[in-house]
Length: 113
Image 1: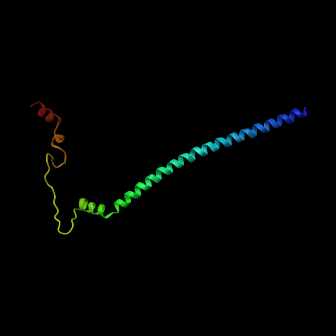
Image 2: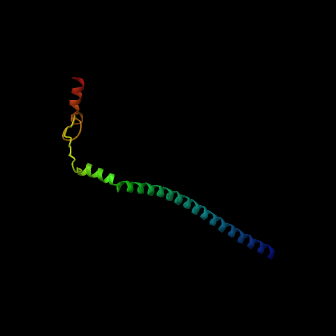
Image 3: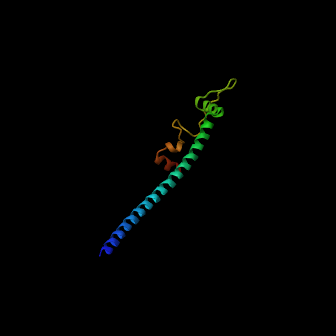
């Protein structure tokens, strides 16, 4: 009888031990999945960082700064003349083509007559 009780206690202890090991393994798997995801994010961020560094290098270049000054601020170098094109073809003050500003009945009338 004592042997049966000792065997039962040993079996219960083994079952609890196995259960705790299974929980630990499941936690390790979740941790491994999280680590894999973080590594992917790290490589994506490194790529993004390298692209941003290249963009920063370009934006701080003299060529870019000069282009922006010419385009946005209408600045020129010495002995250069600023030319502004005022010729707007088929556009009104809104900047839209004439057809876009027409009412629907005007478009139909134009289409059929």
